[in-house]
Image 1: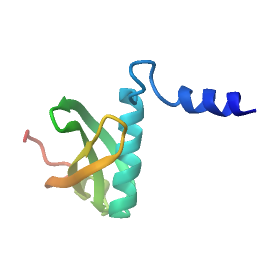
Image 2: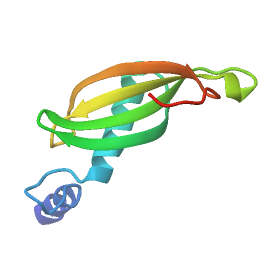
Image 3: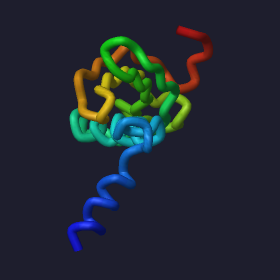
Amino acid sequence: MAESRGKSKQDSKSKQNGKAQPAELVRAAAKLLGEMTGRAPETVLGLRKEDDGWKVTVEVVELARIPRATDVIGCYVVTLDDDGELISYERQRRYIRAQAGGD
């Protein structure tokens, strides 16, 4: 019985030094951001490894409007450690969904 619990715990981590896999990090970041902001994440825009952990960029609808093209979107960067634990999050910018252009 203990063996099966250990195996399922092991399955949730990659085989590389017990660290979370990138897909797990993205899921963890989206879930944590949703819990912290009370808003459902809409899109994951990027994942980047840095010295202080993993940076996951996530879009969240901050203000839903009709038509949807006028929704206010928040772009957040969530920083996780190698185990998928939250280090920090912050909103980088806000924009209207239909707004064209880069950063």
